[in-house]
Image 1: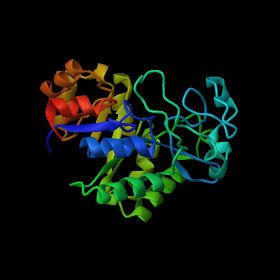
Image 2: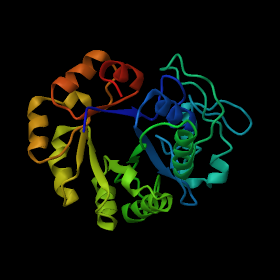
Image 3: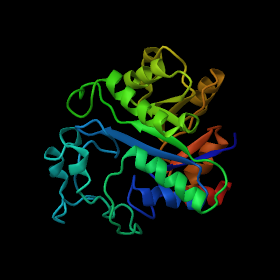
Length: 274
């Protein structure tokens, strides 16, 4: 495998995050690995969203009123049926991405993303298959609040993957080792990853998995030669997040990372090719 470029929540410099438009744009650019986030609705649909709630600055309600960040307390998606979630427009540009286009887009189902991106690539006669790096958003202290228990959560995600026939085209990752372990117990043939944001948690989380994942993906600030050599010695690949400038991208490649997760895949593609 060459140096891998993953589009973080899609091509975010062009379209709002975790939308079908952002994912299809990433495919247009030449990206073949999408990183996206999963949460759960009240009726146990798998929804593509970084946060488990609806809020500003990216969403407006069914009446077209822009939401504030404080509205997250009102619109927790695990308390809402998907039919109601879909009435919210989450295509507003994020202020951190000045060139994002305003679109109309609800929080999509994972099944919709699979169907839309794959159909788009076929229609446009693009080469290769898209790989979906699925981050399960899960917190040990939020079972029953933002999501189901890890066993139920993992089963819901795997059912969606298997029904789409994409077991060979997905990776499952999370900061929560519990849900990764539950998914692996149900289907050890899939590709798994562990996300880390603190070094002190890495060994404990790896031990809690009871198996060696194919990936350990750290925050870019944690990456050094020692970590890279440690993971590679165990035949674990490392793809840091979120690497958003040329200096950082070049440093990750020169330092031995297996790829990067970035909000700006177009910059990375310019540096390294598709």
